[in-house]
Image 1 (cartoon, rainbow, N blue to C red):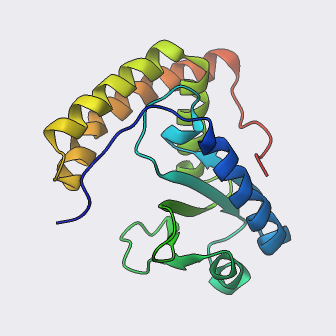
Image 2 (cartoon, one colour):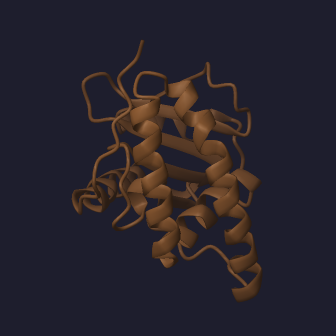
Length: 181
């Protein structure tokens, strides 16, 4: 059994923590990172979240990993080769460091765009962010010791939000904003 699911109120420390990582990653990865973005719930002001910073690094191509993996390792991230999602390379913090998820995705890929649109939609729609927060708080209680159950139960909620986000994106002509770093 892993760590229990805990969703906490938003804290303004999350953007600052991301900024520290962003500076280090930009310096280490340089031109190989087309974008470095704060994604996930901690990137949405006011949104309750698991206290885990999610970072997305967008690259031209996932292979060869030698273009970015050594730099990510130097920044304290280790590759999780057992991740089954072949559209990204997933990295985690070194043991003993605060929980951080780093997702390397191909620039312009569906996964990269999904993460950015989800974040941007919630940042612009506080009522949707609040509904999502309430759902996560409830599911964290129900699935406290069942991470897979928590993730599965969030899925239909995320897809409902993305349906609204897609409509919004089409209406305003959404494009990803400039990279955070």
